[in-house]
Image 1 (cartoon, rainbow, N blue to C red):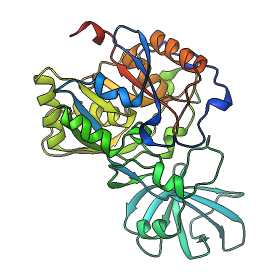
Image 2 (image 1 turned 60 degrees about the vertical axis):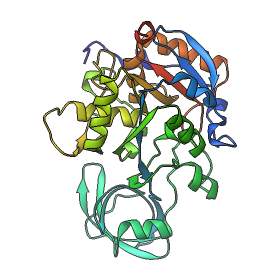
Image 3 (image 1 turned 135 degrees about the vertical axis):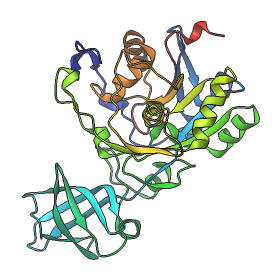
Image 4 (image 1 turned 30 degrees about the vertical axis):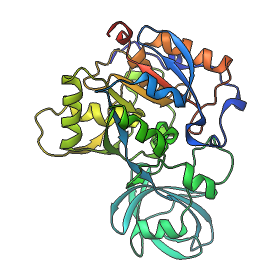
Length: 349
């Protein structure tokens, strides 16, 4: 990492009304800002994506599934609590964020959703180790709520349960959606297959840490949050085959980037590559596998904004975001998309 990088270099002004509070009517209705490898901006729509992809390109999706991770309740003593499950560690145990007027101690019982009680076993850093009376996933499915991001003002409803989930989600464990994938419907996936664009999947369970602000000015002092990921041998082989055939590896979302680049750092590992990643991608990072990125617009001063700046260059991203604000693109999870080609890719044909 460049030791001179400062948090203030990744700030921009965003009018609050540009933060999308609900999804587009149809998944593929969003706009698409194309930043090509030469740094030129093109205003497009997401339905134009097939024209930007080539035969032998490989799209890599994150197939994590958002769980209904938010539970409201109270301590046995009566104080209100809110539990946000961060990671399931055993069938009946999870690490969770707990909001309460006073942090619960080990042995505290929480009555959740007026339906069951769970026991706080202890703490691991900022998270609480909680034992549930049966399978965590079953209880969350019956009693939990979809954990919408903090910048979405309304409580989760039935529309959010469908639209804050990709159409290809299959591995439960995320508490935030890999939002670049929200733009894809089955028709788009089928069209891309027909034109020779292959598809592969990784799994990275997005944690609530993705929304945590960077609290230090010197980025070299930032401690990245940890997320669980898995990359199959089939996906590794597809990546290598695409690159050998002259195709590009197009990551769908920053989470797919982090999974792929974490796997690329373990070239000798056989079988499924998996573990916890704290990979922090900032300008100066040398990408091993990823050539292009489909992504949404990211929060000011966020690690995700730093990642896209690493791929495209800091100055092109500044121009892209200024253009997006001026052109009134919709921002963040339910907002519009970008197609970013790595800096210099525009000169390669």
